[in-house]
Length: 482
Image (tube, rainbow, N blue to C red; front, side, top):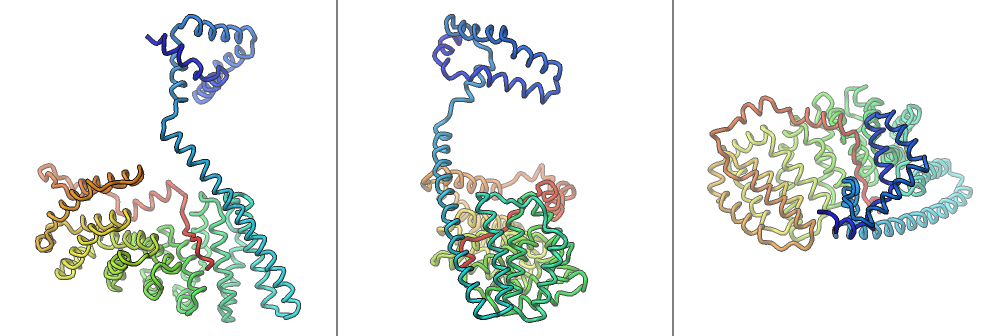
């Protein structure tokens, strides 16, 4: 019986008008147009309204069973403790968000004052290049300002026009011919600002437009001379500008194919070279790792990674992070890249032919899982180890005590204390990952060969995902300016 409960919870019942709106919404959705018209007509009638109000009184006075929709909507109104805490957190985030916007407005105020000061200097210097530089700064500042006044919501609902794209490309080539490094930086950053400003659902199409317009003149010449010369210029600001734009282009599989046109890996090689020259955790290093991680989805790129010793470099970076603070983005993307490298048939075959190297990698990765490393990196390392836990590496597994050490890790990790709900979820994910990847499999029903034949290739799955999703994330870091 619900009599007592209905009287007790009456105050939490939703408003009659709210229930009517739910019903009308359902009727519209189901295309019950005639029923909807009749229902709306009855609602407008005072007689029906009075009847409904009387029914409410009967519920209160007699305690009759209420319609199920009342109970359903009543239960929707009951908030859990977690939902209440989330609402509190949301209010705090909104407050901080407004503070950040206010700080942004103040920064723009200072920037505008500095531009005015530079204008006064321009009049004295009478320098044409300074005048053009100031105009470009104004344009870029204006674009960032639009993001601030729109409270962070991208206001771009259209792609860069064909004319603007051609202007940028022509300016980039002219500045390159004139050896004007500052001019090249401004054009590259302007293209990237446009990319960051545009609405997320249009970003994929923007990347396709950059490729279609052959922004680096790769397809027109079937050469990489222009972009290689840009990457060879030893200027940190230019390297930041060019690597950040290449990262935008590499955000889609088609972009990676453009950067490796005709199977030429020269851009990948240059990016690896720049990566290794950077200070660990620097902004440019982050963009280089972003490019390489996105490029690692193509198997054709992997031999270049192996030949240029990216496996050793990534393992050394993770090793350094145990005692030295390294940006979380670098560790996350580097370890993800390592997983992509080891996963490929090329690398597994290479490691089979280099048994000592395979042992060293396995031993080092097994050491990492007991160190204090961030969860995302730990997951990537476990994935790498799962790729190496094959019969072809049985000797190395025995030498490393692979099974015992994985078991010891699971035992240790299952009893670690977690500080909050998020940490508990991470812990469960890691343990589930271990159970899935390292649990002995029943081979009597093994149909892996059949699955392998029917499974889409990695690149096809990514292409399919891109077609369905449409939204891309372009990297942007708070400390880029400095």
